Length: 157
Image (cartoon, rainbow, N blue to C red; front, side, top):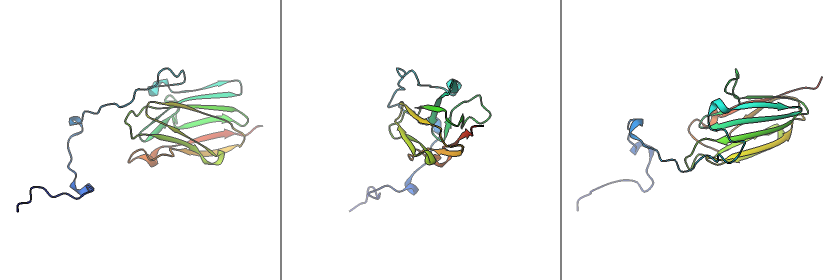
C-alpha cells in the first residue's frame, strides 16, 4: 500500500506554509451598515462631540485598535467630565465573519459586542471620576490585547 497524503485530523500550525500577502484576495462577508446615522467608516470621520452635558463619541473598532478621534494626540482616549451623559457609537470596520469586537469598561460594569459592519451604541453617565482602562472583550485577532484605550473622567470642581 502507498501513502498518498499524511495529515493530522486537526491541522497543526507547523503544517502551514507562508505566501505573500498580495496573493490573498479577501472577500468581504458583511457591509458596513451605513443606514445607521452614528456609523463612521474611516478614521477621518471619528470624533468626539459635546452637546451641553452630553458627549457623543463616534469611533471605530478595527483589528488591534480603537480610534475615537483620529485628530487627537491620543486617538484611543475618551475625555469627559464627571456627570456627563456619554454615548459611545462604535462601528466595527472589520468585515470578515470571525472578527467580532467587544468594548468594555470594568469599573463602570459596561460591555457590548459589535459584529462586523455593525454600529452599536453604549450609553451611560460618567458618575465616577478617574482614569478607566477600556478594552476589546472579544478575542478578535493576534493583536487583540493591543485593543485598549482609556476613559478619562475629570472630577467636578
